[in-house]
Image (tube, one colour):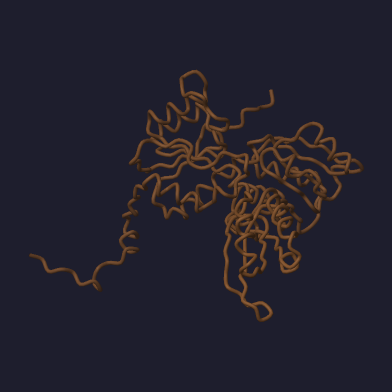
Length: 377
């Protein structure tokens, strides 16, 4: 029997790999992978109207060896995912957005669900959660402007702080008042975190009452306390402001290190997005040679995010005709690149970031058939 090799004499792992033996990829359980994806970009950062997270789940247990990235999940892309033996599709845009009343072979979105389940492929969508994060789509899009600093146009707040309510109300009551007041307060809807603690006020034993409430409930609480002038004068109302998350939120306002002409910005954007052309509307009183110092951008359809922002330039995928007219009338130039062209290029950067985040435990590939549906004829 051979003698065991002492630990100090065993070749280190990095040396084994250097001799040409690559690390073995490990499978990940789907739920473990979804948890890791949620850690990468919390679904709580997505817009309230969005549909993000795990949208299609094969029956458990389901393990993932290959994660397949796409901007849009079309039937052509689904066929590619099947051929490449994907176990989970990460589709930036959610293929299920409005509720499905049935899952048949009749419509293309229903067929996506059928094919995913038949081939045991999960579907996950991050969408606007990836717009908000500091290392997300909008941050990638800022690189098309050249050297600049940027801040979110609409900063995100910490989703779980505070957990409930918009206001906190605190007041002190003596034993005679307490039961009657608490009984009426408990009948008011949208009251939470109601607590009582002993307190000594001006030498008297009293009870300190604290509660969280919505703005609507606040009016009823104040009206109730106002019926007793002593209670009312001892009342404190605090606005529960959720802390802002640094560098997180929708859109970006970018300040270029050095002003450059609009025409130069157009060429930079085309190069970054690898596009032969973009659409440009020149702001009133400006020309293609006018300097751009501040640019507001939003990947995808940016009208609602950009509107009202003071800048020299708006950069986005698409805007309505009338929103473009409004911007131009205000002296703001507009660059439109088509919706998904402002997002798709991020997938290569995402692949590398997820490989690090997931510790290279699974194979990550980017779709080769995913493309913008529009072309110039």
